Length: 226
Image 1 (cartoon, rainbow, N blue to C red):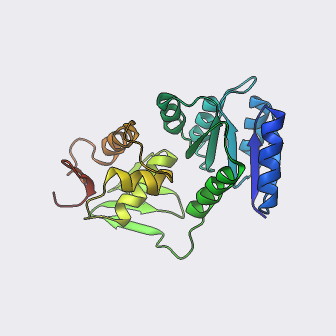
Image 2 (cartoon, rainbow, N blue to C red; image 1 turned 45 degrees about the vertical axis):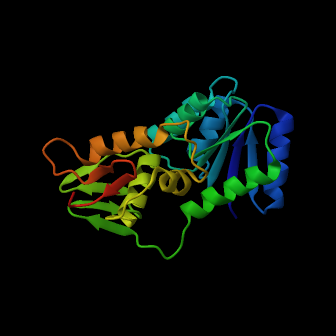
């Protein structure tokens, strides 16, 4: 059974999340304290985490940052009353996979959870990708550029996977936003450019032939040839 951890200090909201996800057949554990929630997330082998942004003892940003630093790539749906674009960007930059603003419809929350789980468990897909000397292994969760192993954050890993699966094609920001983050493009955010910039610094380190190219006015492409 799919196991989900809900870290939420508001009892009413937590009960709403637990009830809705339980109706969808998920096993849901609830923790209302930040530090205790992180401990459970680190040791509980969960398939997904719903994470409140503001928590006692340890906030949501610190929790998701700690998980990613431990190379735990469990999908995280961040849920918060903080709705500003900058707050959403901070949550995603820290390693969150999606961001839902309170108040929310329970059905939308469940749908976002299902999207994140589908993205994680897509069957029958090629698990080893290669473009030039860049290799991505989905089973081992490793990326190499020649003999150099690249240390990618989970969102960077998914972004690179999508670009490698579509290598040679022009990939728009809308395509990246909807395929990697799972929701419609927000023209008010530069999160795509930020993540592409970070990924490019790792993949196309000084001295290496660039693979990630900007297509002016259109988007990006990952290609051995510019």
